[in-house]
Length: 318
Image (cartoon, rainbow, N blue to C red):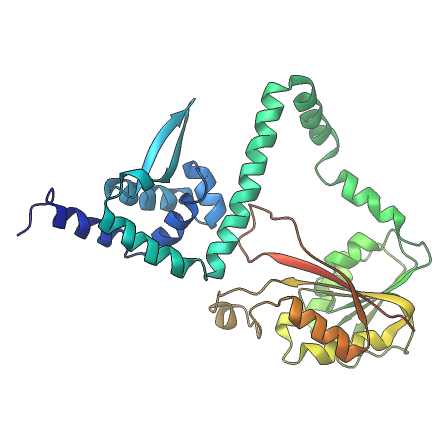
């Protein structure tokens, strides 16, 4: 048997450490950024105990190095310590991982984690600014500004919430707009929505399919499709149906998942589509006679467990 300290034994140990997909993703992340255990866990959407276990295996195999910064331990790829064989193995693995959408999502979440680290650092060293930010959040919460911005909605605006679900989006908009038509094909969803929105008198509920909403053409200024289209077999048809409801100059807001590889969502959550990209949105707009005015990936929430989201605004010119 080869001694563990022999070159062959070291190589075998390093290969075994890469036999787990999570450790491969972790190493791809640490090849780009230096992170602590909790930051890795947030970036990869896994429990910290799992991140520690995988990290320990990579550290023991010599794939990563650790350094201390204050009380925190930071980890990165041991690029300078790898021999030629290990470098060749990692080069091949990295080229494959570069095509993996999960790896891209990990990096985006890591960017958000690092940005928060920088904010925390600035708060620590800039006592006044940091104290005010914390005081403001303690007094008013984190959503005060975003909620206040809804006051910019036109007070007589009519909104159609297609696939309203349990009414969360409608509950946010209802205090600021003239009227909301909440449409959903699931009776249980509408029942939950009615309970949530019981305090508002400017909402009409419609038990109907979003493909055939019981509303007049050109009835609204804004239509919403929030986390709806990935459940629909023909999303282009749904967008076309929504476009018919818009007045000239009206807007359709779509919020959904960016394209991802979490195939288990088809079985566990009934998703028909694994997210969408810009080409999909443009195809829907063209089919519906709309123009895309904006499309943005939404700010990454490191506490979220699902794929990244995007928001797209399509408008009706005539």
